[in-house]
Image (cartoon, rainbow, N blue to C red; front, top):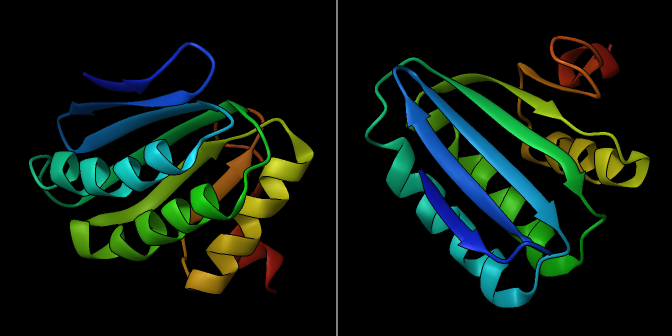
Length: 128
């Protein structure tokens, strides 16, 4: 498992057979935000396809421009890395809205955003 940041803000990436589990927390500074997409792509390439992406963002605070750009880069890269779907666990309403907006901007499909596994809105459901 890869871990970057501090107890107050950071991320971890754990690979498994045909899956990646990402945990994000705190409020990211510019350096942390710039590191995340590169390490995500590097770790994802070794997983195999088709892969499932799980993101635990329950402790992720609403983010500034740098962290939003990092998630935009990850969402745009995910289909090319073999992620056909993603489940994002997020409890903060503002963080959830930020991630939903970024997902919509990136045109992602098959991603769900909710406070518990397999619940919540999917991007496709919200656009119907």
